[in-house]
View (cartoon, rainbow, N blue to C red):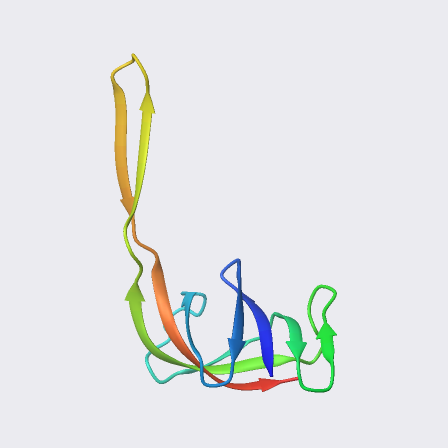
Length: 105
């Protein structure tokens, strides 16, 4: 059984027991906190596939926050040729590592 959930503007395919990195959509969640993904787009079980329009009604995915971390650095470089214009910026996304505990459909 697996589900496709939406968190932080991105979709993730999750299964029970899997660890997934998601953006920090729950403010002030500490390690050990139980979280719920309520925007479930698709649920696939052995018997059937339930596809939401846009989300599956009554479906939820529960997980536990394991740790908070930051993603890899992304370099943003802007340049206009022949104008002596160059700008470099960096960005690191704030992330949670979440263990999927249950898929309720």
